[in-house]
Image (cartoon, rainbow, N blue to C red; front, side, top):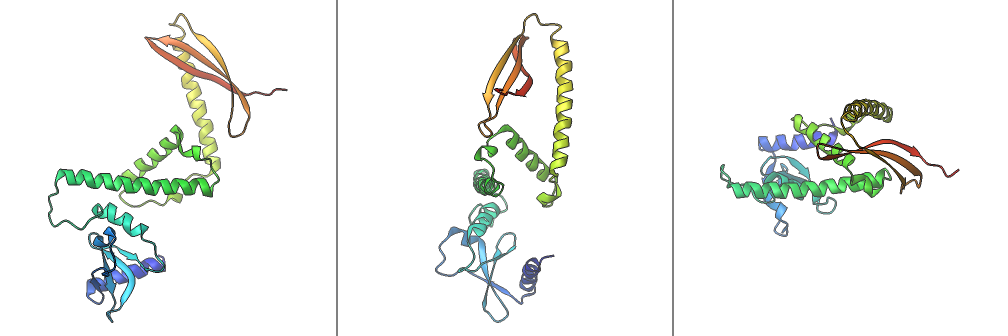
Length: 235
C-alpha cells in the first residue's frame, strides 16, 4: 500500500477518534465545490494540507499554493451534484435527473481529457477517437466496469499486441466463414446481383487500395458485402 494512501487513512482514523477535527472553509474561499469539503485540524489545532468530503468522508490532499482544484470540483459534482449535502432522504425526481446530468457532464469532460492524453502520449491521430471501433472499445470498458463493484486497474485487463493480433486473425476467419455460408444460401435464391470496384487511398499512410464489393437485394433490403481489399500498386 502506498505511503500516501496510508497517510490519508491515518488522518481519517484520527478524525474518527477525535484527535483531528474538521472546520469550515476559509472566508476567502468562494468556489462552489467548497460546500462539499471541510478543512482538517491536527491535535495542535493547526490546519493540515488535507480536506474531507462531507458526504462520503473521503480524504483529499489540498495545498492552496501547490494543489489544483479540478479533483475537488469533479468529486463535488459526482458525489453531491456540485452542492451541499441534502438533509432529506427523499429527493425530488427532477433533482435526481439534474444530478445525473451534472455527473455525466463532469465524466464527459474527464474522458475528453483522457482521450487528449491518449492521442498525445501515444502519438495517435485525433480521428482515432472518432470511429465505430473506438466507441465499441469504450462501451466494452463501461460494461466491464458495470459488472464489477470494485475499481479495476486498466493494466489488469489490457492484452499485449501479440494477443490482439491473434484475436484479429481469429475474428477474421470466423466472420469470413459466416459470410461464405450466408452468400451460398442467399445467392441460390436471388436472381440479380452486382459487383463494384472501388479505388481509394489511405489518408494516413497514402497507400492505395482496391476493394471489391458484392451488392444484391433480398426481401426489399439492399445487402452490400466487401469481398476483398488488396493493396494496389502502380508498378
